[in-house]
Length: 202
Length: 202
Image 1: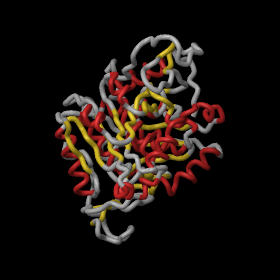
Image 2: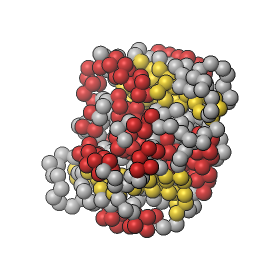
Image 3: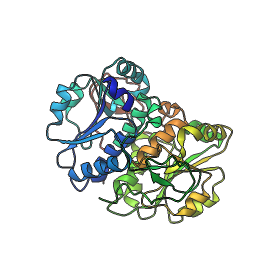
Image 4: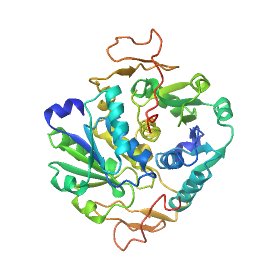
C-alpha cells in the first residue's frame, strides 16, 4: 500500500494469461481492483495493451502512486520475486487459515506478489508459489478473490488511502454523484464536474 | 447466508444492465461471486441467459442453496423489496462508515438487496436505494465491490458455509488440486476426480 511502499514492503499483482477479446474486461478489472484496493503495481500480459491503457488512464485521472506494466515473462517475475508469492486459486488453502501469517510477514517487511490466473494455470505456478490460497474453495471470480484477499491483507487500511497527483476525486455522498478537482477541499457543496465511466475508453 | 436464510434475513443480489457479448463474463462473475460469498440468490437481466445457465450449473455441481433467476423488471424488485436496498457505487458513502449499521439491521432480521450496476445507472436507483455505498470512491469493478461488501457484511462467516446437494467439492491444499465427490469425508488422500473450469460451458 502507499504508506508501506515507502517502507519497502511492496504489494504487487500479476495477472497470468489473457485471451484478447475474451478477457479484456476481466484483465482491466484485475488492474483497477489492484489499484483501488491498495496494491502498488500490476503486471498484465503483453497482449493486453488496451487494459494497460485503461488502468494507466484511471491512474492519471484519479491518482497514484500505482504502476501498470506489460510483461512477456510472467514466470520470471514469479521466479525472481524476493518476498512471498501468493497464488489465488480455488484449490488452495483457506484464506482465513493463512492470511494471518502472510500479513505478519508482510508487516515484517516481506513484499507480496499476488498471482491471479485466467484460463488454466500450469502446475509449476502452484509449485513455485509460497502460498496457494483459496478465497473460498468455490468457483467464482479472480477479481472477487483478489479484492477480498487485498482487503484482508490490509485489514481495511487500504480504504483510507490518500491519492497523489490526481486530477479529480469523488466526494462520497448518500445520494447523487459528485466529482471535484482533486485539489479542491470541497466535500459536497457545488456542482459536479462530470460523470465517470472507467471503461469509456475501451 | 445459508444459516441466516432460515431466519428470514435474506441477502439477494440484483445485477442491473447487461450488454450481450460485452457483459457476459462480468454478469457471470457477479452471479458466481454472490453465490460463493454467502448471498442467497441473484437476479440477472433477462438477456443474460447464458450467465444464468453457468451459475445454475455451478450450483448443481458445487451445491447451494442458491437461486439464480432472470428478471425483466429490476426496478420493480428494488421498489418492492422489503428490507434494506444497498446500491454499490463509487459515488456512495464509504463502506467503512456505513457497514456497521447495515450489518446490525441485517442481524436484527432485515433482509438486504445488494444492487450492482454495469453501464450507467439511472438516477432513480440512487434515490430508491436506502444506501448508496462505495467500496472505495475509486473506479474499479462491480465484482470486486460486491465481494468486499459481502465479506464485510458477513464478517467472514460466509467462508465457513456448508454446501448442500453438491456433486463434488474441492479439498483445500497447500499445493495441487483435489476435487472429490461431495459425500466423501476425504481431506487429501486419494486422487482427484478432475479439474474445474467454471466457464468451460460458456
